[in-house]
Image 1 (cartoon, rainbow, N blue to C red):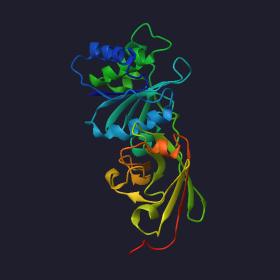
Image 2 (image 1 turned 30 degrees about the vertical axis):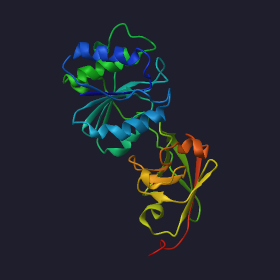
Image 3 (image 1 turned 90 degrees about the vertical axis):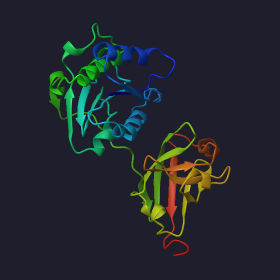
Image 4 (image 1 turned 180 degrees about the vertical axis):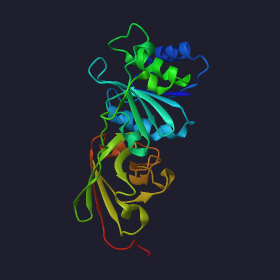
Length: 269
């Protein structure tokens, strides 16, 4: 199986062309689309998407990730064996959050032009480099055939919340999804007091809004109420019931999140 994660959108021919190349090399392969709606040129958005989805696929799936603002430049094309999966992508950090989750990582610089579609466009390596390499991988070609192993592959750490004083932190909104939920960079292990009931109360400020309640699901919230929830991604989200938290709070990707936690046991303990 091959998956696709790209910023090519839904209205252009790019994804279709890549599929055509893949099927011409391996007509028997299954192609599944994780998303082709990554924000244009947004490597972090791509990194978040693939990190949230890759592990739900069968062993030996080839994940093809093309978020490539440096196409035609000096960035390297790579094939990575990470955990039980293969990844084909530009070496621009888009696999960083996958690297963080797995202990076994082998990355190779793709240099063997034998596997490329010719001629290679300077602007569409998704079609001419990444798609054919992914297709040959799916046919069982050993990853060592594509190039030499490298250890200086690009990786970045996702921004972490920072303590600013006793029981106060600053975080950031990593993304606003299509429903308007604001995904922060705060996980349960970063500020456990919010999630384990060991604190009296917390206050979260984002945009023009304050949030003081942690709920277990969206339906618990009142219409128009902003509340915190532990999302399926494992990060704290600011949400509302059947509405857009992003619109209500006046916040979006990159907005600062301030959190303060009261000391002492939770009410009722």
